[in-house]
Image 1 (cartoon, rainbow, N blue to C red):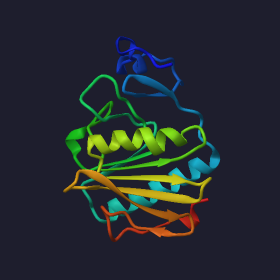
Image 2 (image 1 turned 60 degrees about the horizontal axis):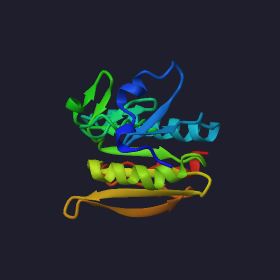
Image 3 (image 1 turned 120 degrees about the vertical axis):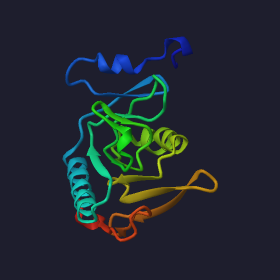
Image 4 (image 1 turned 180 degrees about the vertical axis):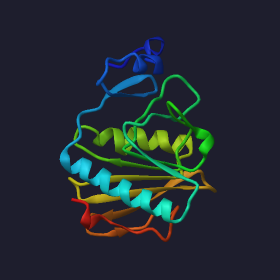
Length: 183
């Protein structure tokens, strides 16, 4: 049973958690963040390295951040996320305590405990906030689902790939990521 609206949790409660306890907050509801697996960490590290190297080589005015890095998607006190990878091109959004507003590109690496959250809840949150590109890397299902925000419809369009594919982000058409090298 969900909490009544008056009992929703706030970002301050996230800040007040004991050291080492990680939670996300979506619409005032806490979501536990389990420790990542070694496969999860390998994928995140590989992706982060590839993206950061690309941005540096292109001298892009964007930064890549890896969790734990706070993302305050909405201008409210009820949503606090820690995407696995966030690419942010608007320097004004980056503050000392995290990103305030939608990152340009978010990547989540799915685990069994985050599957529903990543595919449904976060997809909706990222879509409504204006994240331009959202990838879900799912090593268990051997797939990468890529969503691009269509500027005309303001809704996500999707493309699916397998972990044996090389995937190109829409935001960076000359960047290729070989998922067969990830696990």
